[in-house]
Image (cartoon, rainbow, N blue to C red; front, side):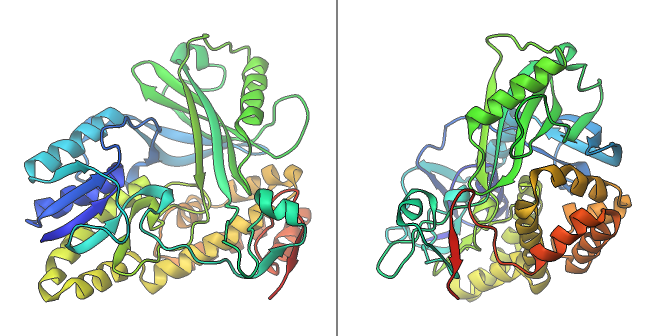
Length: 414
């Protein structure tokens, strides 16, 4: 019997499997397409990455800045990962630890026997059990079928998730200089390009190494996610305003992932990575947290498997979700719902208040997964640094339940 079965061969799955193998645990990774390329670009705050991560997997480490209503220096180093180098690093660790990566579909009822089963299958949560949502029913049946939760007695739940979406283009660094100076990262630029208004988006611009830069139009959060066509049009308009014309064959990037997944629920299974979810509800970041926690999960599993699978699962779940982490995550989920309720014109004002906070307060909210008090201080600080039009919205949002999908009519049935 296996000690550990990891379902999902992405960065989080490979990292936790390698850590388990390095501790002598008999470990197997299963994935329906384990050799598919990793097309996403990964960034993280440099101080969040584990100390043992080699510098060779970092494409760039640069200071970050942001633009809401005015410009702000973030006083924090931003790291962009070299994705092929990260994958090679993790594969070398898997091979050295004797961990096999096997092609195969994982069904919750047909898994190889293992002392600990880890679902690292990303936002799809392939081993999770679906549960009906609570609290809302769409009045309009057509809207419900098209994009609502779709739940009524006897119907299957189909939640509309809050999503982060983005459309990006990779260009030579010299072409991007009107928006990104050499040796820096533009974390957010909320200035809107000329043209029709609508849901607010920002420019995310980072160096990728090798003389390349990613320019990405990003919708931070929307329920459902903003469509790619709108984002692509916004990006073209923004770049045209800076007289940037990407080459016709420039590589493109499309991003879509949920921000409000429920905690992983499946008997006998530990959710890890985006499946846990370790995704920050306000930023979408989770890779650094997964890389940092993988060794701790492996240590805990190695120490608890001797007393049985149930103890191993309970111990690793307690490691990932102590009360402090659950409380901080709940606060950040509330912050996400507040952001979703802000009128488009107020979103840059909200971030102007956030970036006006002292660096330690911004760090409390962006990092510190197990620090609900720091998260609460950052939220209270942002209330104090924004004007009353935004404050009134924040007060109202704090008293309301989850923001409904765009253009869908809802009623509260609790």
